[in-house]
Length: 423
Image 1 (cartoon, rainbow, N blue to C red):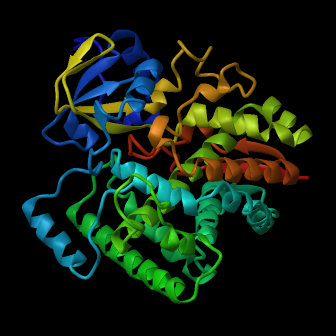
Image 2: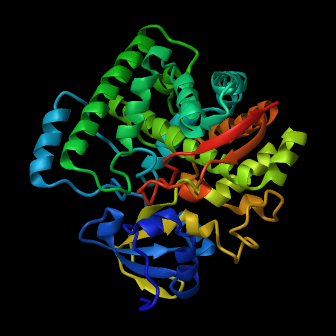
Image 3: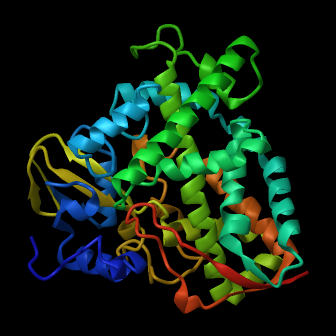
Protein backbone atom coordinates (compact mmCIF):
# COMPACT_ATOMS: atom_id res chain seq x y z
CA UNK A 1 0.00 0.00 0.00
CA UNK A 2 1.26 3.45 -0.87
CA UNK A 3 2.06 5.74 2.04
CA UNK A 4 1.93 8.88 -0.10
CA UNK A 5 -1.17 8.41 -2.23
CA UNK A 6 -4.52 8.90 -0.50
CA UNK A 7 -8.16 8.96 -1.49
CA UNK A 8 -10.96 10.08 0.81
CA UNK A 9 -14.39 9.57 -0.77
CA UNK A 10 -15.96 11.51 2.10
CA UNK A 11 -13.90 14.63 1.32
CA UNK A 12 -16.02 17.20 -0.51
CA UNK A 13 -13.03 18.33 -2.55
CA UNK A 14 -12.69 14.78 -3.85
CA UNK A 15 -16.40 14.63 -4.67
CA UNK A 16 -16.17 17.87 -6.64
CA UNK A 17 -13.15 16.80 -8.71
CA UNK A 18 -11.79 13.29 -8.20
CA UNK A 19 -9.70 13.15 -11.35
CA UNK A 20 -6.40 14.45 -9.96
CA UNK A 21 -6.75 11.90 -7.17
CA UNK A 22 -7.48 9.14 -9.66
CA UNK A 23 -4.37 10.06 -11.64
CA UNK A 24 -2.22 9.92 -8.51
CA UNK A 25 -3.67 6.52 -7.70
CA UNK A 26 -3.12 5.15 -11.22
CA UNK A 27 0.48 6.37 -11.24
CA UNK A 28 1.50 5.71 -7.64
CA UNK A 29 -0.89 3.15 -6.21
CA UNK A 30 -3.05 1.46 -8.87
CA UNK A 31 -4.43 -0.77 -6.13
CA UNK A 32 -4.92 1.34 -3.01
CA UNK A 33 -6.20 0.12 0.36
CA UNK A 34 -8.96 2.35 1.69
CA UNK A 35 -11.03 2.49 4.84
CA UNK A 36 -14.34 1.08 3.69
CA UNK A 37 -16.38 3.36 5.96
CA UNK A 38 -16.16 6.30 3.53
CA UNK A 39 -17.29 3.96 0.75
CA UNK A 40 -20.31 2.65 2.61
CA UNK A 41 -18.49 -0.59 3.56
CA UNK A 42 -18.22 -0.13 7.32
CA UNK A 43 -15.64 -2.33 9.00
CA UNK A 44 -14.05 -3.41 5.72
CA UNK A 45 -10.82 -2.67 3.92
CA UNK A 46 -11.57 -1.86 0.31
CA UNK A 47 -9.03 -2.16 -2.51
CA UNK A 48 -9.56 0.63 -5.06
CA UNK A 49 -8.52 -0.39 -8.59
CA UNK A 50 -8.04 2.53 -10.96
CA UNK A 51 -6.18 1.56 -14.15
CA UNK A 52 -8.21 0.83 -17.26
CA UNK A 53 -6.56 -2.53 -18.02
CA UNK A 54 -7.04 -3.76 -14.45
CA UNK A 55 -10.67 -2.63 -14.22
CA UNK A 56 -11.45 -4.31 -17.54
CA UNK A 57 -9.69 -7.52 -16.47
CA UNK A 58 -11.77 -7.68 -13.28
CA UNK A 59 -15.00 -7.10 -15.20
CA UNK A 60 -14.16 -10.07 -17.42
CA UNK A 61 -13.37 -12.43 -14.53
CA UNK A 62 -16.60 -13.04 -12.60
CA UNK A 63 -15.19 -16.27 -11.18
CA UNK A 64 -12.47 -14.50 -9.17
CA UNK A 65 -14.35 -11.23 -8.69
CA UNK A 66 -17.95 -11.85 -7.64
CA UNK A 67 -20.74 -9.34 -8.11
CA UNK A 68 -22.49 -10.51 -4.93
CA UNK A 69 -21.41 -7.41 -3.07
CA UNK A 70 -24.88 -6.62 -1.69
CA UNK A 71 -26.08 -3.07 -1.21
CA UNK A 72 -23.79 -0.08 -1.58
CA UNK A 73 -25.12 1.60 1.55
CA UNK A 74 -23.98 1.17 5.13
CA UNK A 75 -25.50 -1.76 7.02
CA UNK A 76 -28.33 -0.64 9.33
CA UNK A 77 -28.09 -0.73 13.11
CA UNK A 78 -30.23 -3.31 14.96
CA UNK A 79 -32.74 -0.58 15.81
CA UNK A 80 -32.98 0.60 12.22
CA UNK A 81 -33.27 -3.00 11.03
CA UNK A 82 -36.40 -3.42 13.16
CA UNK A 83 -37.92 -0.21 11.75
CA UNK A 84 -37.18 -1.23 8.16
CA UNK A 85 -38.69 -4.70 8.68
CA UNK A 86 -41.85 -3.12 10.05
CA UNK A 87 -42.21 -1.03 6.90
CA UNK A 88 -41.61 -3.92 4.53
CA UNK A 89 -43.83 -6.38 6.37
CA UNK A 90 -46.53 -5.46 3.86
CA UNK A 91 -44.19 -5.77 0.88
CA UNK A 92 -42.23 -8.32 -1.12
CA UNK A 93 -38.70 -9.47 -0.23
CA UNK A 94 -35.73 -7.77 -1.81
CA UNK A 95 -33.82 -10.22 -4.03
CA UNK A 96 -30.60 -10.02 -5.99
CA UNK A 97 -31.01 -10.17 -9.74
CA UNK A 98 -28.92 -8.52 -12.45
CA UNK A 99 -26.48 -6.17 -10.72
CA UNK A 100 -25.50 -8.28 -7.73
CA UNK A 101 -25.57 -11.82 -9.09
CA UNK A 102 -23.06 -14.16 -10.73
CA UNK A 103 -23.53 -16.90 -13.33
CA UNK A 104 -25.49 -19.09 -13.70
CA UNK A 105 -28.16 -17.11 -11.82
CA UNK A 106 -27.14 -13.86 -13.51
CA UNK A 107 -27.21 -15.58 -16.91
CA UNK A 108 -30.82 -16.63 -16.35
CA UNK A 109 -31.88 -13.12 -15.33
CA UNK A 110 -30.00 -11.53 -18.23
CA UNK A 111 -31.52 -13.89 -20.75
CA UNK A 112 -35.07 -13.43 -19.47
CA UNK A 113 -34.87 -9.64 -19.23
CA UNK A 114 -33.28 -9.42 -22.68
CA UNK A 115 -36.44 -11.04 -24.06
CA UNK A 116 -38.38 -8.02 -22.80
CA UNK A 117 -35.81 -5.25 -23.24
CA UNK A 118 -35.20 -5.89 -26.92
CA UNK A 119 -33.42 -3.62 -29.44
CA UNK A 120 -36.74 -3.43 -31.31
CA UNK A 121 -38.59 -2.11 -28.28
CA UNK A 122 -35.85 0.47 -27.61
CA UNK A 123 -35.72 1.60 -31.25
CA UNK A 124 -39.48 2.09 -31.31
CA UNK A 125 -39.10 4.69 -28.56
CA UNK A 126 -37.25 7.20 -30.77
CA UNK A 127 -40.32 9.16 -31.97
CA UNK A 128 -41.70 9.34 -28.43
CA UNK A 129 -38.32 10.47 -27.07
CA UNK A 130 -38.01 13.12 -29.75
CA UNK A 131 -41.47 14.45 -28.89
CA UNK A 132 -40.66 14.48 -25.17
CA UNK A 133 -37.53 16.52 -25.90
CA UNK A 134 -39.42 18.94 -28.14
CA UNK A 135 -42.12 19.42 -25.52
CA UNK A 136 -39.59 20.05 -22.76
CA UNK A 137 -37.84 22.75 -24.81
CA UNK A 138 -41.18 24.31 -25.75
CA UNK A 139 -42.03 24.64 -22.05
CA UNK A 140 -38.97 26.80 -21.34
CA UNK A 141 -38.11 28.36 -24.70
CA UNK A 142 -39.30 31.86 -23.75
CA UNK A 143 -36.98 31.90 -20.76
CA UNK A 144 -33.51 33.49 -21.18
CA UNK A 145 -32.27 31.63 -18.09
CA UNK A 146 -33.06 27.94 -17.68
CA UNK A 147 -32.57 25.48 -14.83
CA UNK A 148 -31.44 22.76 -17.21
CA UNK A 149 -31.40 20.02 -14.60
CA UNK A 150 -35.01 20.39 -13.48
CA UNK A 151 -36.42 21.55 -16.83
CA UNK A 152 -34.75 18.98 -19.10
CA UNK A 153 -32.06 16.62 -17.78
CA UNK A 154 -34.18 15.09 -15.01
CA UNK A 155 -37.63 14.92 -16.65
CA UNK A 156 -36.40 13.40 -19.93
CA UNK A 157 -35.06 10.06 -18.59
CA UNK A 158 -37.90 9.87 -16.07
CA UNK A 159 -40.38 10.25 -18.94
CA UNK A 160 -38.44 7.77 -21.08
CA UNK A 161 -38.44 4.98 -18.50
CA UNK A 162 -42.02 5.83 -17.54
CA UNK A 163 -42.94 5.42 -21.21
CA UNK A 164 -41.33 1.96 -21.26
CA UNK A 165 -43.20 0.97 -18.11
CA UNK A 166 -46.42 2.71 -19.25
CA UNK A 167 -46.60 4.98 -16.21
CA UNK A 168 -49.38 7.54 -16.74
CA UNK A 169 -48.56 11.25 -16.59
CA UNK A 170 -50.50 11.53 -13.35
CA UNK A 171 -47.97 9.25 -11.62
CA UNK A 172 -44.75 10.79 -13.00
CA UNK A 173 -44.04 12.66 -9.74
CA UNK A 174 -44.44 9.41 -7.80
CA UNK A 175 -42.18 7.67 -10.29
CA UNK A 176 -39.42 10.25 -9.73
CA UNK A 177 -39.86 10.00 -5.96
CA UNK A 178 -39.50 6.22 -6.12
CA UNK A 179 -36.33 6.51 -8.18
CA UNK A 180 -34.83 9.07 -5.77
CA UNK A 181 -35.60 6.87 -2.77
CA UNK A 182 -34.07 3.83 -4.46
CA UNK A 183 -30.69 5.58 -4.70
CA UNK A 184 -30.92 7.71 -1.55
CA UNK A 185 -28.32 5.68 0.35
CA UNK A 186 -26.01 4.75 -2.53
CA UNK A 187 -22.56 6.23 -1.98
CA UNK A 188 -23.74 8.74 0.63
CA UNK A 189 -24.68 8.83 4.31
CA UNK A 190 -28.31 9.43 5.23
CA UNK A 191 -30.14 9.44 8.56
CA UNK A 192 -32.18 6.55 9.92
CA UNK A 193 -35.39 8.54 9.37
CA UNK A 194 -34.41 9.11 5.73
CA UNK A 195 -33.74 5.38 5.30
CA UNK A 196 -37.18 4.55 6.68
CA UNK A 197 -38.87 7.16 4.48
CA UNK A 198 -37.07 5.75 1.44
CA UNK A 199 -38.23 2.25 2.35
CA UNK A 200 -41.83 3.47 2.53
CA UNK A 201 -41.48 4.87 -0.99
CA UNK A 202 -40.08 1.54 -2.20
CA UNK A 203 -43.05 -0.25 -0.62
CA UNK A 204 -45.39 2.14 -2.43
CA UNK A 205 -43.56 1.40 -5.67
CA UNK A 206 -43.86 -2.35 -5.12
CA UNK A 207 -47.62 -2.20 -4.65
CA UNK A 208 -48.05 -0.06 -7.75
CA UNK A 209 -46.10 -2.41 -10.03
CA UNK A 210 -47.60 -5.59 -8.60
CA UNK A 211 -50.99 -4.14 -9.46
CA UNK A 212 -49.80 -3.29 -13.00
CA UNK A 213 -48.33 -6.77 -13.49
CA UNK A 214 -51.58 -8.39 -12.40
CA UNK A 215 -53.51 -6.22 -14.86
CA UNK A 216 -51.25 -7.42 -17.68
CA UNK A 217 -51.54 -11.02 -16.59
CA UNK A 218 -55.27 -10.72 -17.25
CA UNK A 219 -55.10 -8.27 -20.16
CA UNK A 220 -51.70 -8.45 -21.94
CA UNK A 221 -50.34 -5.28 -23.57
CA UNK A 222 -47.64 -4.85 -26.18
CA UNK A 223 -45.22 -3.45 -23.61
CA UNK A 224 -42.19 -4.18 -21.47
CA UNK A 225 -44.11 -5.32 -18.38
CA UNK A 226 -46.10 -7.88 -20.38
CA UNK A 227 -42.92 -9.16 -22.05
CA UNK A 228 -41.23 -9.39 -18.63
CA UNK A 229 -44.19 -11.29 -17.24
CA UNK A 230 -44.21 -13.76 -20.13
CA UNK A 231 -40.46 -14.23 -20.61
CA UNK A 232 -39.49 -17.91 -20.51
CA UNK A 233 -36.30 -19.81 -21.14
CA UNK A 234 -36.24 -21.81 -24.35
CA UNK A 235 -37.02 -25.55 -24.14
CA UNK A 236 -33.80 -27.44 -23.56
CA UNK A 237 -32.02 -24.40 -22.10
CA UNK A 238 -29.40 -25.64 -19.64
CA UNK A 239 -30.22 -22.92 -17.08
CA UNK A 240 -32.30 -23.76 -14.03
CA UNK A 241 -35.38 -21.79 -13.09
CA UNK A 242 -38.64 -20.87 -14.72
CA UNK A 243 -40.24 -17.50 -15.46
CA UNK A 244 -39.54 -14.57 -13.18
CA UNK A 245 -41.51 -14.40 -9.96
CA UNK A 246 -42.92 -11.19 -8.46
CA UNK A 247 -39.93 -10.28 -6.22
CA UNK A 248 -37.55 -10.86 -9.15
CA UNK A 249 -39.62 -8.68 -11.48
CA UNK A 250 -39.83 -5.94 -8.86
CA UNK A 251 -36.05 -6.00 -8.46
CA UNK A 252 -35.50 -5.75 -12.22
CA UNK A 253 -38.06 -2.95 -12.63
CA UNK A 254 -36.37 -1.01 -9.83
CA UNK A 255 -32.91 -1.44 -11.37
CA UNK A 256 -34.14 -0.29 -14.79
CA UNK A 257 -35.88 2.68 -13.23
CA UNK A 258 -32.80 3.78 -11.26
CA UNK A 259 -30.24 3.11 -13.98
CA UNK A 260 -32.42 4.77 -16.58
CA UNK A 261 -33.13 7.91 -14.57
CA UNK A 262 -30.32 8.98 -12.27
CA UNK A 263 -27.28 8.30 -14.46
CA UNK A 264 -28.85 9.58 -17.69
CA UNK A 265 -29.83 12.86 -16.03
CA UNK A 266 -26.24 13.23 -14.83
CA UNK A 267 -24.90 12.49 -18.30
CA UNK A 268 -27.18 15.08 -19.93
CA UNK A 269 -26.23 17.85 -17.49
CA UNK A 270 -22.50 17.13 -17.84
CA UNK A 271 -22.87 17.07 -21.63
CA UNK A 272 -24.57 20.46 -21.79
CA UNK A 273 -21.93 21.97 -19.50
CA UNK A 274 -19.13 20.64 -21.70
CA UNK A 275 -20.82 21.94 -24.84
CA UNK A 276 -21.35 25.34 -23.23
CA UNK A 277 -17.69 25.46 -22.23
CA UNK A 278 -16.60 24.31 -25.69
CA UNK A 279 -18.58 26.62 -28.03
CA UNK A 280 -16.70 25.26 -31.04
CA UNK A 281 -18.16 21.82 -30.32
CA UNK A 282 -21.61 23.34 -29.89
CA UNK A 283 -21.34 25.06 -33.27
CA UNK A 284 -20.17 21.82 -34.92
CA UNK A 285 -23.13 19.99 -33.44
CA UNK A 286 -25.59 22.63 -34.64
CA UNK A 287 -24.12 22.46 -38.15
CA UNK A 288 -23.99 18.66 -38.21
CA UNK A 289 -26.46 16.90 -35.86
CA UNK A 290 -25.02 13.52 -36.87
CA UNK A 291 -22.09 14.36 -34.56
CA UNK A 292 -24.43 13.81 -31.61
CA UNK A 293 -23.44 10.14 -31.32
CA UNK A 294 -19.73 11.00 -31.00
CA UNK A 295 -20.45 13.78 -28.54
CA UNK A 296 -22.48 11.40 -26.39
CA UNK A 297 -19.72 8.77 -26.37
CA UNK A 298 -17.18 11.38 -25.28
CA UNK A 299 -19.63 12.58 -22.64
CA UNK A 300 -19.95 9.05 -21.32
CA UNK A 301 -16.18 8.71 -21.14
CA UNK A 302 -15.59 12.12 -19.62
CA UNK A 303 -18.41 12.03 -17.06
CA UNK A 304 -18.80 8.31 -16.22
CA UNK A 305 -21.99 9.01 -14.21
CA UNK A 306 -21.58 5.63 -12.52
CA UNK A 307 -18.09 6.10 -11.06
CA UNK A 308 -17.61 2.45 -10.19
CA UNK A 309 -18.92 -0.67 -8.49
CA UNK A 310 -17.76 -3.27 -5.99
CA UNK A 311 -16.62 -6.86 -6.37
CA UNK A 312 -15.89 -9.56 -3.78
CA UNK A 313 -12.64 -11.54 -4.21
CA UNK A 314 -13.37 -15.27 -4.26
CA UNK A 315 -9.76 -16.53 -4.18
CA UNK A 316 -6.38 -15.08 -3.28
CA UNK A 317 -5.30 -13.05 -6.28
CA UNK A 318 -3.06 -10.23 -7.45
CA UNK A 319 -3.85 -7.02 -9.33
CA UNK A 320 -1.14 -4.71 -10.65
CA UNK A 321 1.41 -6.50 -8.47
CA UNK A 322 -0.63 -6.09 -5.29
CA UNK A 323 -1.79 -9.24 -3.45
CA UNK A 324 -5.50 -9.19 -2.60
CA UNK A 325 -6.70 -11.90 -0.21
CA UNK A 326 -9.84 -13.98 -0.59
CA UNK A 327 -12.92 -12.32 0.89
CA UNK A 328 -11.71 -8.77 0.24
CA UNK A 329 -13.87 -6.06 -1.31
CA UNK A 330 -12.62 -4.37 -4.47
CA UNK A 331 -13.90 -1.06 -5.81
CA UNK A 332 -13.40 -0.88 -9.58
CA UNK A 333 -13.33 2.76 -10.62
CA UNK A 334 -14.94 3.37 -14.00
CA UNK A 335 -14.37 7.10 -13.55
CA UNK A 336 -10.63 6.62 -13.20
CA UNK A 337 -10.38 4.00 -15.96
CA UNK A 338 -12.08 6.37 -18.41
CA UNK A 339 -9.48 9.05 -17.64
CA UNK A 340 -6.47 6.74 -17.91
CA UNK A 341 -3.85 8.35 -20.15
CA UNK A 342 -2.52 4.88 -20.96
CA UNK A 343 -5.64 4.54 -23.13
CA UNK A 344 -6.87 8.08 -23.82
CA UNK A 345 -4.61 10.95 -24.92
CA UNK A 346 -5.15 14.11 -22.85
CA UNK A 347 -8.02 12.45 -20.96
CA UNK A 348 -9.12 15.63 -19.14
CA UNK A 349 -9.91 17.28 -22.48
CA UNK A 350 -13.40 16.99 -23.97
CA UNK A 351 -12.75 15.78 -27.51
CA UNK A 352 -15.45 13.88 -29.44
CA UNK A 353 -12.97 13.28 -32.27
CA UNK A 354 -10.44 11.46 -30.11
CA UNK A 355 -9.05 8.07 -31.05
CA UNK A 356 -10.21 4.97 -29.14
CA UNK A 357 -13.38 6.79 -28.13
CA UNK A 358 -15.33 3.55 -27.83
CA UNK A 359 -12.79 2.12 -25.39
CA UNK A 360 -14.57 3.77 -22.48
CA UNK A 361 -16.27 1.54 -19.91
CA UNK A 362 -18.95 3.91 -18.62
CA UNK A 363 -21.48 1.11 -19.12
CA UNK A 364 -19.21 -1.55 -17.64
CA UNK A 365 -17.92 -4.49 -19.64
CA UNK A 366 -18.35 -8.21 -19.95
CA UNK A 367 -21.40 -10.06 -18.66
CA UNK A 368 -22.57 -7.07 -16.60
CA UNK A 369 -22.47 -4.59 -19.48
CA UNK A 370 -25.40 -2.23 -18.85
CA UNK A 371 -28.60 -3.68 -20.27
CA UNK A 372 -29.98 -0.16 -20.74
CA UNK A 373 -26.98 1.20 -22.67
CA UNK A 374 -28.89 1.38 -25.96
CA UNK A 375 -31.71 3.33 -24.31
CA UNK A 376 -29.34 5.76 -22.58
CA UNK A 377 -27.51 6.40 -25.83
CA UNK A 378 -30.75 6.91 -27.75
CA UNK A 379 -32.04 9.36 -25.12
CA UNK A 380 -28.84 11.41 -25.09
CA UNK A 381 -28.40 11.47 -28.88
CA UNK A 382 -32.04 12.45 -29.42
CA UNK A 383 -31.76 15.14 -26.74
CA UNK A 384 -28.66 16.71 -28.30
CA UNK A 385 -30.21 16.75 -31.76
CA UNK A 386 -33.34 18.49 -30.49
CA UNK A 387 -31.39 20.96 -28.33
CA UNK A 388 -29.05 21.81 -31.22
CA UNK A 389 -32.04 22.47 -33.47
CA UNK A 390 -33.86 24.71 -30.98
CA UNK A 391 -31.16 26.56 -29.03
CA UNK A 392 -28.75 29.06 -30.57
CA UNK A 393 -26.29 29.91 -27.79
CA UNK A 394 -25.77 28.37 -24.36
CA UNK A 395 -23.58 29.43 -21.45
CA UNK A 396 -23.35 28.24 -17.86
CA UNK A 397 -24.41 30.68 -15.17
CA UNK A 398 -21.64 30.95 -12.56
CA UNK A 399 -19.61 27.97 -13.82
CA UNK A 400 -17.27 28.19 -10.82
CA UNK A 401 -20.28 27.49 -8.58
CA UNK A 402 -21.21 24.18 -10.18
CA UNK A 403 -21.39 21.48 -7.52
CA UNK A 404 -21.64 17.71 -7.63
CA UNK A 405 -23.65 15.73 -5.09
CA UNK A 406 -22.02 13.84 -2.26
CA UNK A 407 -22.37 10.34 -3.74
CA UNK A 408 -18.99 9.01 -4.88
CA UNK A 409 -20.72 6.35 -7.02
CA UNK A 410 -23.60 8.15 -8.75
CA UNK A 411 -21.81 11.37 -9.62
CA UNK A 412 -24.04 14.17 -10.86
CA UNK A 413 -24.46 17.93 -10.70
CA UNK A 414 -26.79 19.31 -8.03
CA UNK A 415 -27.95 22.11 -10.33
CA UNK A 416 -27.15 23.52 -13.75
CA UNK A 417 -28.38 26.96 -14.80
CA UNK A 418 -27.93 28.14 -18.38
CA UNK A 419 -28.24 31.44 -20.17
CA UNK A 420 -29.89 30.59 -23.47
CA UNK A 421 -30.86 32.19 -26.76
CA UNK A 422 -33.12 30.49 -29.25
CA UNK A 423 -33.08 29.86 -32.98
